[in-house]
Image 1 (cartoon, one colour):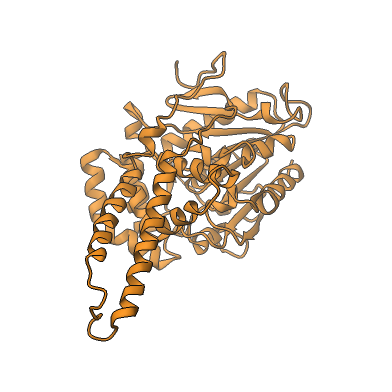
Image 2 (image 1 turned 120 degrees about the horizontal axis):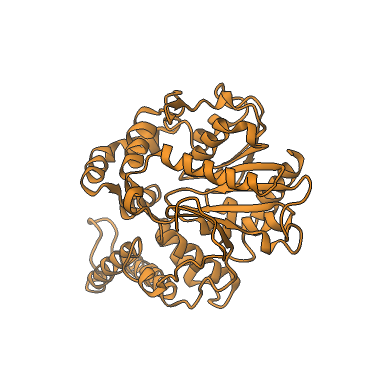
Length: 415
């Protein structure tokens, strides 16, 4: 199918090989490495003489108690990993329609899940939302289950809800820069304008927020407002995260130069390094869940999503590493799309900047650069800070009340 074409029928995404996904690919390799490492450590502990002292200070009963508790926690973690890999949960609920394709990317239409609120096409004064996810992780986080779906919630609220599926870059897309992706978004915006919507809002989540902001500035005559969820902008605001990235920058730059992309495994390793024990905690908690419960099913589908990221094309990866993290080009007013500097102050449309205060992936201080009070924020920006994390803000049990409803109110009020 040619670029920017509209298919006559909804395309069905390829089935995921869950056995492979939950076994030895992507971050699942880390699960397996953990398992083997802990089995060896468990065996070493089992051979330890319980009466031996710990550095000559702690003796017998205490050392034995530590040993038993360590083994118990290891066993619980390993049990959680195995339960995840064997769990039968799959994405077996209805998928959105594909209404446009541009290269490997798709525009997904969620209106059929609207309970009739937007079914049948746009009407007078109708509202649409073009939602842009990160290029690193796939779109499913905004549609993790039928019940915990941000996109379906927007559709049920009477909003024409559309979501970008970036897919995996192949062929010429492996040489894409941020400019190439923003130009692709402009073609998707043009498609929605041709559908007759009178009020089109742009939304961006995480890295997708930077692309959404660039799109909004370049095409602000054609949009009603901008919605930013956990969008980083000042990459030097949190020195801890920046120091971690800068320490790995030489290696990552060489990796991109050799591979032509930033592989997903390298990205996942960086994310896990922000909180190395998170993987242990979450699988230990999972082992304690009723495996037939909705909570267990949601955990499995979310973990599948985490494990199925996509590589970043080489030019875009270098822009992120050297430009964003290295030179802080967005906050310094030096980030460019198609030769044009992207300056948030130039966006004269309403903006809602949502900052998850417990975010470990996008430091809150980085996202606050686009919120009211920042000297570089859009002049009509309003802010909403949530006591939630980066992923929890869109999928947790508190998301419908704390995020979905305020966004619905915002979209209906910003026509």
